[in-house]
Length: 217
Length: 191
Image (cartoon, rainbow over all chains, first blue to last red; front, side, top):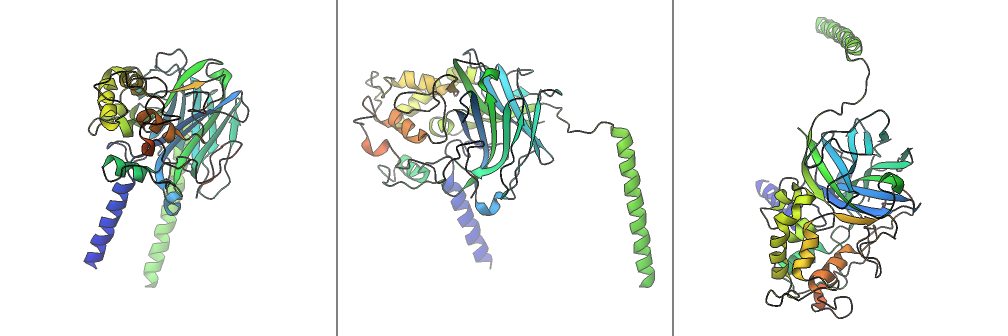
C-alpha cells in the first residue's frame, strides 16, 4: 500500500516536471501552477475587421477531468496593456476580474498609475460584465459599448512539440520528430476574450500590447 | 431520545431565526449592493510574445522578468538574451557578429527586439505573427509561432529557404488539435 502511494506520487511528480513550461505556461517559480499563471496572449483582428480581439489564457494544462473544478481567482486582476505612442508604457488598460460567477471588465481607459501596481478603474459607465461560462455549457457572450466579452474554459489554442524541444535542449535529441507530437493536445485553459472597436484603442497605426496578472494585496 | 429530538428542533428554529435576523441587519447596514473592487493589485506574471521567458531568461531570473515593466526590460535583459541566443544556436557565432537571421537581424539586433517583451499589433494591416508578407502585426490563433521563432533562432540568413540547422527550424506541429471558430469567442470549446 505504502509502496503504491510512493509510486503514484513519483509518477505525478514526473509528469508535472516533464510537461513543464511552454508559450508562457508555468514559466516562472512564483506563478507556476497558480491562479495568476498566464499561459498565452493573442491579439488579432475580429470577424468584423474594425475590431481587435484580445485573448488572455491562464491556468494551463487542465485535463478534461479537472477542468470543471478550475476557476478564476477573485483576488487576481488580468490587465491588457495598450501602448499607443511607442514608449512601451501603457496608455490604456482593459481590466478583468471575477466576482461571484461573473467576469467584470473595465476600460479601455487610462490607468490610475502605470507599472507594477494597479487599482481597478471602476466607474458606473465603463464596466461590462459577463457570466463565466461553466465547463460543458454553451459559451456565454455579452456586449457592452461595442465590445464583446467571454470568460470560461476553452481548448488550449497553443500547439508545440514541447517535449521534443526539451529533449533537444537537454542534449538527448538532435532535431525535431516528423510528424511532431503536440504536447498541448487535449488540454484546456481558462480564457478571457475581449473584442474591442479599434477606434477605442488608437484607431489606426501600430500599438504595443501585453497582458499582466496582478494579485490583490 | 425524544427529548433530544425536541432539543435539536429548538436549536434549529433558534438558528434559523438568528440567521434571518442577521441578514436583515446586513441589508440595513451595507446599503447598495455590488462587488467591491477596491485595493491595490501587484504584478505576478506578464507576457506578450510567446515563449520569451521560457526560452531566453535564465533560471533564477524568470520571476524578475515577469515583474519588470516592458520599458525597463531592454536595459535589464538584452545582454543576457544575446548570451543565451549565442549559446543556444550555432547560427549566431560570437566570433562572427555579422551572423544574422532571415529578418537580417544580428544577435545583438534580434535580442534587442526580443528583450522588450511587447506584441506589436497593426490596426490597419492583417494581423499575424508572420504570414510570408506581414511580420509581427499581431498574433492569430492559427499562427505557427513556434516555427517562426525556431526559424529566426536556428535558421540563419536563409532560414526560410535554406536553413542552417534544418532539423531545428520546425517542430512539425503546424496547427491546433481543434478547429477554431469563425466568430466570437473564436477559441474552440474545451475537451
